Length: 204
Image (cartoon, rainbow, N blue to C red; front, side, top):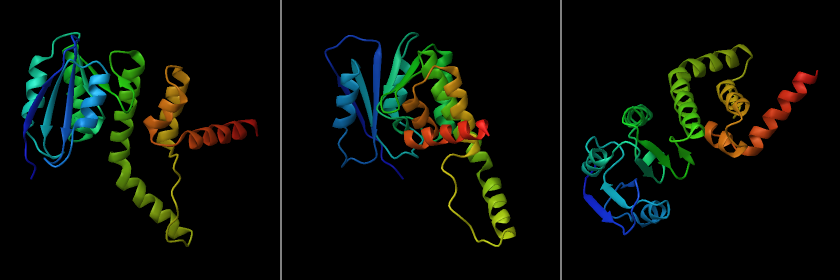
């Protein structure tokens, strides 16, 4: 059960960027998030001290009430805002309906841009798809391994779903390879190796 404490910090900078920070316990220091938000141009910051699963976050509620069309909600990292992927997607949808952008500094996402919207929605769709199929894919893999006389094996890092999402982002030309790799959750070297493998297969 988390504890919620509210903190507001005013900075002497005029901007339409409002920052949100969250730490899990009162013993943690939000300074890292505050410094990053300030560097990103946030003129006001709202901080909750609450566990990730706590339903009510008073400072987030206060921030959402103050956002106006054209504003941006800035977070240090996506998991500071969303309790779950479903909650995060719903929050971004609500922000979009209000013409408010979400900026996540660590993931380099800015939904005020076409690239940022693409990255976020591919990220969300991929996470949702993999979550829904995880049990089915795991059971099918174990059954196939048993049929081959093995108990299991190391799964490939680049799953077919991740490969399809990566190809979609690369073909769009809107994202760098670093962003594509971060979005699908693999290293750049893994992504490059997979692309090279695809080229070899296509040449055969």
